[in-house]
Length: 104
Image (cartoon, rainbow, N blue to C red; front, side, top):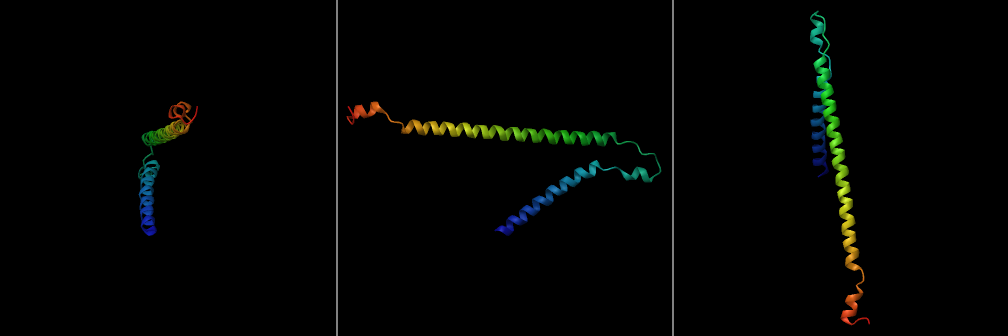
């Protein structure tokens, strides 16, 4: 069973590594223009694209952290509500004892 998990984790690692390498190839300089003897133009579009990718990744990261924070807050609220319900369930009800004749 652990061998299957190791194989899956290796597969996921290779998948994410290939995606990461795709991003790296987008950030690298184009060496074809420099070999042809032409004057290399600055890659303004690639830097704009790189900046957009970084901003999008930061936005996704911020959104996921915010979602995680809200989830933990919701869990805490639910836990407190359940604890309050439990306390209410087990608190002594004097009126019930008097009605049943257990206590005067």
